[in-house]
Image 1 (cartoon, rainbow, N blue to C red):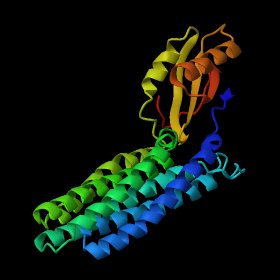
Image 2: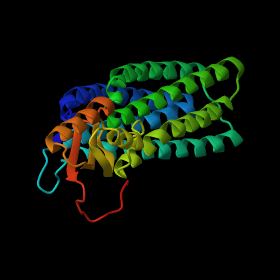
Image 3: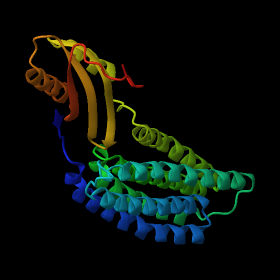
Length: 300
């Protein structure tokens, strides 16, 4: 039996509007930060502007990925293009790490030879950047729980907000105490925080692409629950994976005892999977005892 769960396409229009607004905000203030970094001589501001540029690229990529994911399934691509969102999320994470590596390298160079920075203007520009990022975070916040792609964009904006905070602190220290080293030190902190925030996104995207079971689902618990049903003899070839954010699939073979009604047990199994584990996209094959099928490499 095959029950179809919620279609990720239903949320796409809202996600696209959120991403578009965040994209316009990021692109506008990116230009302001580039100008501010150049005028003040602040590496932290230029690093933040560079990261905001990666935000613009990431948000644009998220929009494109959402549009591609809306394409209908074909005989050659039976699941359609849902995985485009996961690929975009993976690229988000990798891009964040690359930007961070560049920031850390340049900051290390500057720590050895700090340059003069205008602390007051740097503080003002960074404060404006933080305000823009906070608005972007608010816009994308709800969608990040439903889409790994939107979550990647949200992480981009979050790490940029952290960069703005770091630049503000550095600007205040330079303005108040003349500590030129605070600018590259803040850049190092920004780079480290970005890498840290990116890791979970990369790991989750790779897990989806490798057909791993979702982190919040215990496949062994599902098997135990099925075996506990009256009339079930064994369960084998049980697989659980994520097609796209919010779209979890399950397949399994259930061997039933003699005298059991296949249709009734099929309904019971499907209801259990949907109600207890919230997996509505399930394909269950009911088999009689003694049914001989070639064995493959899978969860037993």
